[in-house]
Amino acid sequence: MRDSLFIKAAFSEKTERPPVWMMRQAGRFMKEYWEIKNKYSFLEMCKTPEIAADVTMLPVDLLGIDAAILFSDILVTAEAMGGDLSFTQGVGPKFANPVRDKAGIDALETEVTDRLQYVADAIKVIQQRLNGSIPLIGFAGAPFTVMSYLVEGGSSRDFKLTKLLLHNHPELAHRLLSKIAKVTVDYLNLQIAAGVNAVQIFDSWALALSWDDYKEFSHRYITEIIAGLNRKDVPVISFCKGSSVFAPLMAEAKPDVVSIDWNVDLLDIKKRLPAGVAVQGNLDPHILYADKKVIKERIYRLFDRMKDENGFIFNLGHGVMPDIPFDNVKYAVEVIKDYSVTR
Ligand code: CP3
Image (cartoon, rainbow, N blue to C red; front, side, top):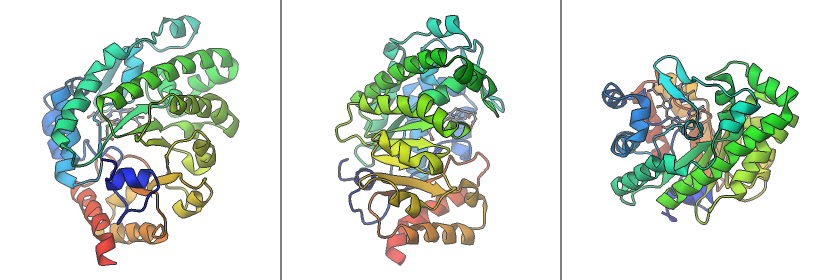
């Protein structure tokens, strides 16, 4: 795996073309996903290694991407800590017991890797299926983003309760974030021990934070997590919405790759990062709704811009939306794989 396009690009080594994978590459935009989803709940899918492996393999087999990502969710850590988690179609994740005070925070458990063993089992099944063809990416949520779901009790537009906790009771917020960070280090090390080839930390909602709050309540814990990983030959990718602003700070946490949203020119931001830090991104996922001509033009524009750079992994600035036409996603992957040949 060390010689795969994806791992080499993640370590900023020269590759014949940039590797491609997409966040949310296994999901509702595929009819094959629905064939499985109609039979099981989302959490059942995550917790049954054979099913998680089946779903992980869909984009490998149907799209031909250069890296697989474990089929799971960032909220499984919070569930293992004691969160009463459910996913409802059209509603998203819900915690029936939101964590909003000291008692709630103290009740959360931190020695929980046994409860996440199903993820290690899934990784082993997936690696058997992949059989050395492409790398497998494991992942976890960043403490701030996971905390926001625990505090709000689900998805939120404005993160009002989460921010109130940060601002009025920073000591409680730190107590909660420290607990999540501890669990996250153990969880990612469990995934590494089980055989993932890279890990990505998702801080999807960092964008909601001011610079100072990002530094104090997010960056600090991501730094702690990355420092705690048994990462030899396992590159670490740091993702957040808001990376166009936070990328220089994200790089200080010492990831190998920073995943960039679509608000910024990818080459400009790469030049502002220390040498040896790769970038991943950053096509606006909405481009995949557009005509194929536009998809091709925009991918070429990005690739032309990045053509002299090592350390570039193609991805979207955020995940594939559920109603993006499958055919367009497949077309984008083909365009990318042909790029170096046709130029
Ligand atoms: O990328 C992949 O294909 C791997 C699987 C994956 C899922 N969730 C599967 C999923 C990954 C990497 C995630 C991460 C995740 N989960 C994030 C961070 C990435 C991001 O999108 O910002 C977040 C914030 C979550 C929390 C979450 N899970 C939400 C808000 C929702 C509901 C909204 C939505 O987009 O569906 C989920 C459910 C979820 N996670 C689904 C999938 C395939 C949909 C489940 C269904 O079929 O209904």
